[in-house]
Amino acid sequence: MRAPAPEDDADFLAQYVAQSRRIMRDLQAAREAIRQVEARAESDDGLVAAACDGQGGLSRLRIDPRALRLGEAALGRKVTEVLRAAQEEAGQQAQEIADRAGSGASLSAPLDETFVRARVEQAARDLL
Image 1 (tube, helix red, strand yellow):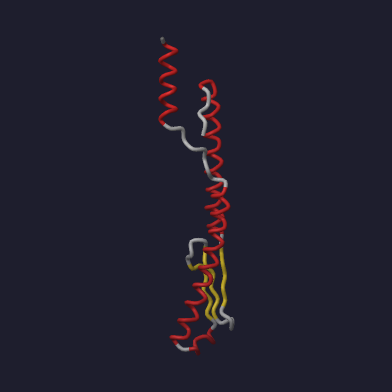
Image 2 (tube, rainbow, N blue to C red; image 1 turned 30 degrees about the horizontal axis):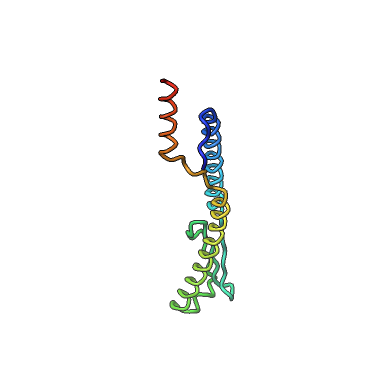
């Protein structure tokens, strides 16, 4: 980024702060949107259904009593499969929200030490 002229420093700083605030608002909105995510999945036979939140946590699990006839191992596989599908969907939705928020979340590159040095030298020249 090109350094502002000394007389534009205040405007540059104000714009930088405003841009930072916009980015923070966008990121906070994205975090809230991710909290609202609820992805659902259901087994092919409809005996097991699950819902997961934007962090992949289980928010709901329904097992039809008829599923108990499947046996412990088969039921375990079915529950795991449905949970994994719900978590993957929730993760995908959360990632899409994060990607949208991140696409506009870049600040201008910070000014480096040459900027500070130039300002100090300018101030010294102005004093002399």
